[in-house]
Length: 243
Image (tube, rainbow, N blue to C red; front, side):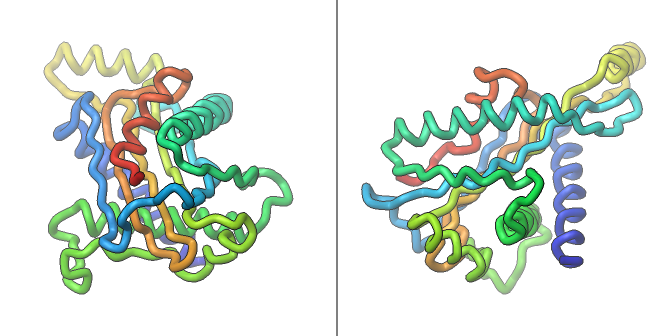
């Protein structure tokens, strides 16, 4: 449990790092890069994909740069994203299975909650060691080789599915005070970072626990508070999703 908490903190730090880099690298443009494990040849018509609870959090960025979570925005974003995921994968003829898991609700299955935290921890390691060149692990030998372990096999048995799709997104929006600071900064030639959208999507083989497909999203634009904009974000997250 302690290790997972440390990994969560590590993930938050990494996303902040990517947010800072986005100011200089991606600006308002989308930056989406995916990896696929060599063992994945395609889902096939008979493969069933379990949709895990969407791990999304929307925050307001104050004038001082502090991120304040907004429950109303987050709830709306979760609904919009789930609708978009269903529509997109249905159009691609994927056999999507709903988990109907309420991970944040009282009485939530602790095993499911732990699996979601585990995914966040593994995702943070992938962000660090696959996308940051000087942090690449020699032991990986340039291979995309990551796993959630045998713990996820319980999902295969419970839902009779072959794969699980995990989504993790953090999005922030500038407050009125932050916008005013941006204007003042522009007058004096100082760049003041505003909101950034960052996250990742993972497809996990429930027989082995291996992450067989992973896509990172990082951009300075985007808005998950409306259905249309959320569809755009999901399209980027699931870009090059295996067929």
